[in-house]
Length: 229
Ligand code: GLN
Image (cartoon, rainbow, N blue to C red; front, side, top):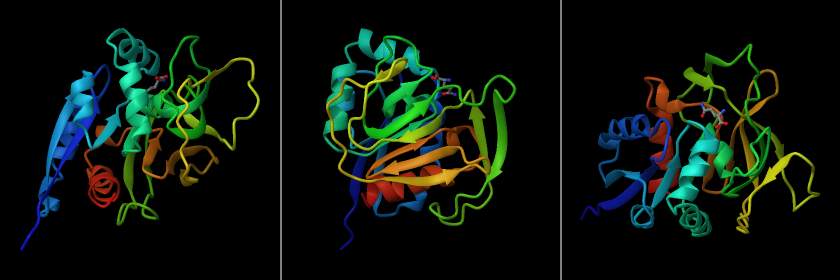
């Protein structure tokens, strides 16, 4: 007897590149004969409550934070993080998912799902946006030449251990969630800059896999975090 499982995968749809994530996921469904999926845009606590996993897209982290606060979604998002369900943050989503941020804007809120410090706009004006082929095959099977899009991208500037000191100019998450898993380095650029990390079932990428033609990253997320997770 074949058992089919159903998963609701939400994409936070307050601002930014959410529709592109949904289109990428839709192209992966045939690779999962044992599973069915609903990919939904999340704007309300009710929609968030129905999700088995959540993607936070790229865009502008300060706007996403502000809209979440104004629409009453910030506290439900804090609670969603605490449920321990899988979450993937891309670019602005990585910033929003982190515990602390440098180069942030005063009042910007963070979900505190990953024990990382993220530096916003880390590549400066010269390298504002760029595309480069990267080899992710050490964690995404067969994905050795992925056209990777960076747009005013952040980097992971520090992996955090414990609470640490509160420093001037750093924005801190107000969520008291504790992620018990270890932060794994998934990918560093040749320059050493850290652009992909995982902590248990939380995933953070500086770049935008939803803006390239390749759906390998999305297939891997569904396989590794949602279906097997
Ligand atoms: N620099 C943006 C921010 O701070 C992120 C850019 C992006 O998501 N492409 O939110």
